[in-house]
Image (cartoon, rainbow, N blue to C red):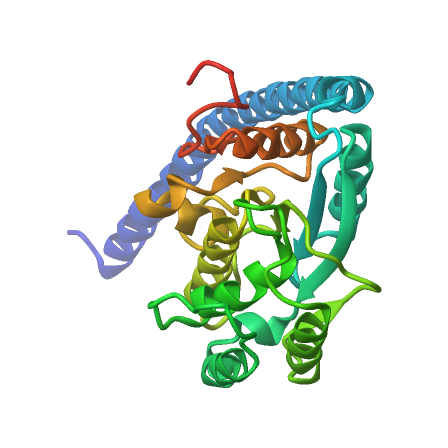
Length: 313
């Protein structure tokens, strides 16, 4: 006769067997799983090392290219802007190092920088647009006509373009010194610009900006700079809008210009001015403006060529 004790012992034996089986099975599974994870980890580590080597090799090639462009840059631009005058306009996010390097290269090209003007954060602030437009219309010199567009960038370019650039028709100033001083003073007091000492009108202009616009109203800020630069170009013999990496995408001023066929037909753009090669291209593009041509230059996907005269990629 099977007793209760026999049943209890049988059930305990079954449970013990199950427990031992689970332990042995999990141990085998764990070893297999750990072995697989170890192999995957080793493979990933190898891939990371390969990518690091590729990155280091790429950085080394870029450093060599920058060094080469820095050395040959002055020779590449020599005489390109001989006896020409250039005014330099910078936005609030422009890198001073890019500005200084450009000024040195312009000198190598034979140009004379007649002055510098900085556009402040308020200049591109959408909340300040109406105030900027009001100042522009009040300070307009006699004989200068504003464009029909009503956006702040175009209107500001319609005022500052004739103040900063001489007429391409007769190479004469388009406003008197007193009118220019009054307008610049008004914009300075309004917090929209900062000017250097003794700024004089020039034949050509470079508008130097940063990368992609950031923060609230980024698109409006980029559009203001883009339309300002386009209108400045129309005010004289030519202009180039030069930005850094990211400036050619949808939230950068260069990108806004490149999306507008009417703007790209007159204004040249460069999307890598933070590099020595980009600064050389900026000077060459300025020379091309004197010949009545324009282009989209740089390394971004919406550039048409690396530099003026280079075959399209």
